Length: 469
Ligand code: TRP
Image (cartoon, rainbow, N blue to C red; front, side, top):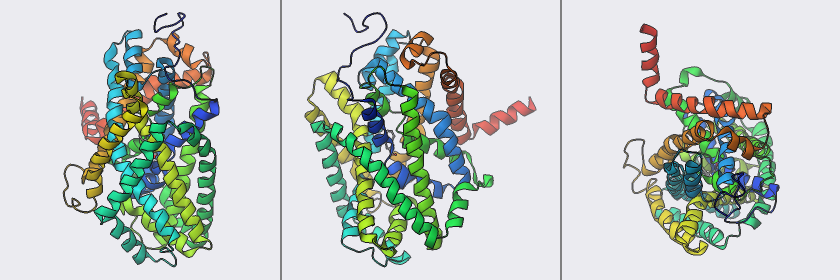
């Protein structure tokens, strides 16, 4: 029998299946929940003035990210291969041509770029586990935490060592293919993370400028919104949900046929949003109570959180556990960032998993040095959007992921036959299906294009032209 078996377009997986529907939800949750929620969300929200950014972010998460997550899962499951091969195959099958594989290829590249800086930040998290145990946060004040973070980021050797440690752990896990065990651990990690965030929230509410923090996060000040803000919010939505680069597609390839895609995607998106919002609610009251600049950038949580842990009862224990959990959350995300590339090398070039992940890991590790140096040796070397790390982050989150997402919506909404879509989604012609289809055909692609046009200033120009015409 050919690739397309039994005439219904369904293939058997090249790689085997998740043991259960829960395993898939856990894997995608592990991918989605990570530094994007705890480290990046507060710092990007801070840089973009809070409230209005958060609202646009939420709109993008539910209006654009959620339908794309469903689409990606569906494509992965229908293709049953790595994202490059799946898209080539589906492109041919649906009459669009195998060039649709570019979605997978650009995803492989985006994964390299993202993981190269992600690992540096995750390395700091590991460093903070050790710092927490050693008690350096105890009785910390705003000045001491700033020095503490500055001396870590400013020391390229220390940063490089932790980046190396994190990459080694990631490669070992991916090479051994022990993700299954980790998925189970996600059942513990996410609730534990939420629990510690709730404890921290109590502490922020009791001792921080809680009201100011809440206001900052939810009171929109539209005067602060520019095209760049909207683009940053959309980019963050893609980043935090791990969509637009084929991670979810790669995982979808292992999804059993009978699992409900809308239900799993919704569960993941809600869990991810909960962690991000909690994290913001924890950070900003501390930030305002201690005179930290909300625009502090990538160091924001590393300066704010030790202040809480250093001054609360049981802080050494909670601080250590917290940074351990965040490190673990980063690991489950890092694994997913490697998965499209590893699956592609294994299927395309017949490499073993161990060899593929080692080679890919070494390349990403080396690339990571540009981000390591972005905080010390090369911190003054700025081009386009800032340091090397700023640029890797900007290009992936704000350009590559939304572009990948745009192509995915065009493919699912306009190229794929409705028969294939309904067959794969398997939710009939329900309201749910019609909402998904509307979001995928119109809302998401139009939103991405408008946000792009707006960011480069063309939207105003076009609107002005339309007004005078
Ligand atoms: N979503 C993860 C986080 O929030 C990071 C991540 C994992 C990611 N896989 C991805 C980001 C794919 C973009 C694309 O930390």
